[in-house]
Image 1 (spheres, rainbow, N blue to C red):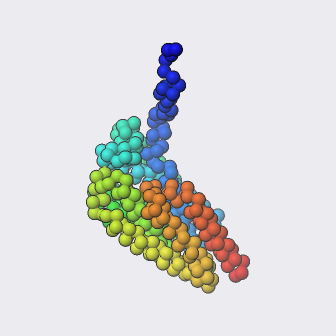
Image 2 (cartoon, rainbow, N blue to C red):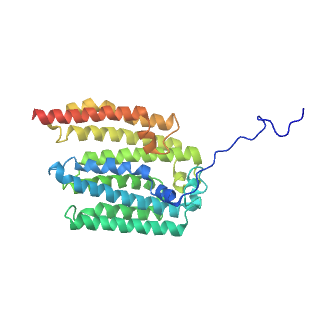
Length: 319
């Protein structure tokens, strides 16, 4: 008996309809909301040496986080505008709104201007309210100036491309310290720099293994073996500076050495776990996603936080 149409097995599978394009969604993705957690984590580190009561620091800390969130959003947006042609040759970056043509360059520039206005209003408002004086915002200015130089050519220079990005996180730390009117702990600054350098090197390694060197000229100055050597060096420097920071921290007083020895295994495990995700599991393209969505890393971080917090509470109650 003849059939009137194709059988069920012969019928083409229904394809899931893609979500309709949304300009608002695309504009939001340009400023990388998934990366804002970096500011929430790094900036408050600068408050560790604060001498003022905690309540007085909340306004300055919140303002520093907001300002760096706006500044980093501006940097992401400008980089996407300047890299749009190169991003089209990358297997993942070609889907970014500007590279894919969903957001026009004129619209992106207008959006950048809005962010500049918001950033200026935030800094001015903090100065008028007495939260943070204008002179204390120099890390933001340095960060933006550094990224202008980065976007105009330094991002194509091997080694400078990763060192500049890592330095941006140290400037976040300094901004947090200025919000607390306290000096930046030297070993903490080195620890933040080397840790961020390791994460950026891991991202470069992932880019090489996935997309090759064509989409990012600076990658021509690296090999996977060279990046592995730099990753190991950065990991060791992070571990050493972490131990020295905890050991000499005023928070733990003469218990600093004991706290450093107690928490160092968890810090080392976190570093080793990231390298495992990068080199064994071929992850690392998005360090924030790799770290915050990995259950092993999150569990280890919670245990480390509990030990550090418990140690600080013990020292405070014992003194």
